[in-house]
Length: 480
Image (cartoon, rainbow, N blue to C red; front, side):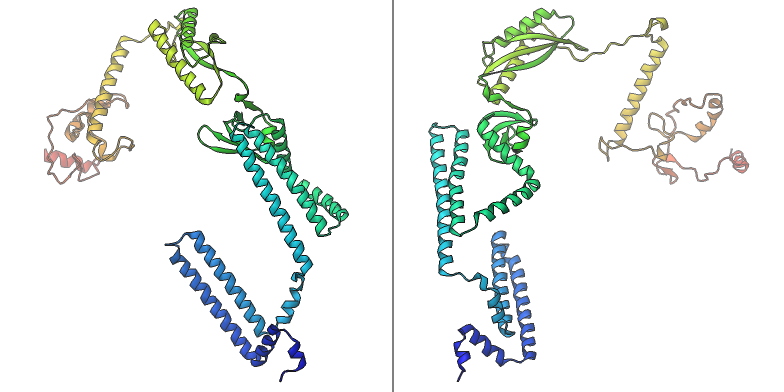
């Protein structure tokens, strides 16, 4: 029969005592090792089974299952070791601070209800504001401002009620909040600056949601304004997040704040053309464009004397500016002005350069003999390049670049190998010439046996590379 002390213990303590009394210390070590081995085996099964499941199930779902499996296994292993080694009382005493009484439970329930109600109110008001914006009662910018005001109005009383419910001393809270605010102010000054800039943008309204703006060399439509950044969708469908402190600290161009927008397009005319006539033709062409506004009327400004043309600046206006309207007007003006210039014979010149020689040197002169030599060189180079391309077009692409090989030396421009006897007989003639002179091409009567084993790629290879010694000269005379 159990003693009175054991009978007064809770059921889990009684179970732990019976389990602890059953096994000795050595058996506990064995059980611990066995439990660790089983846990490792289960982890290995979870790991390898996850690889198989990822082929059929989404990867994030498999990872969630593995996480739950590992968590449950760890809890079971920890509980088993606590019971084996009799540490139940120590663990319960360590977790006593988590004990929740009836009063604390009621406070937790009230806190949850208050914040859930505040969140529900903000969601309902956001939907109502969105419905009003859809009926054109308020603008999208006013919707964002109203939503943030409602959030502050609802959540601040909820936080104050929670502080009073849990009996937190307000004086200590404010003292700690002041010290914490100083630390956070230094650590998160960039974030706080962005938040303050967000309030400035929301209430100063330099631009609104849906406006076409340019900020930091980015042009696009404003899609959202938050406390920390401004979201812009560029005309390349890029979604750009610009920090609000950068928006307030840089130049912002709002193209949607005005009812009309002026566009400029530059064009050049030839120096031989009458400038006034060209300007009149361009202005009349712009006035015929449907996308260009009639008031103010388009005009033409003479801007500069460029290197090859007189520069004219076409200035015209569009109503209700949008990026699509701007592009349409630019395209229409360029096409109309070009067509008008062509019909009137007004030339838009290409870049030109005028080359002149000094008078004291007689100007630029090209001798007749030099002109003939340059023409002959051009024909020779063209023929040689054509032969090389025909012979090497097979096996390599047009972008390949190669250095000349040893086998390429000795060819005449026609591609035939140079005869050695003719080369030797011509040595006396070329000796008196300059080293840079090019020998005349050899006769095409020379034929070569392609079956000769000493021939390499159409050239005869000398069996004896040493040809300058006296012995070789005697052998040549004997052969003759």
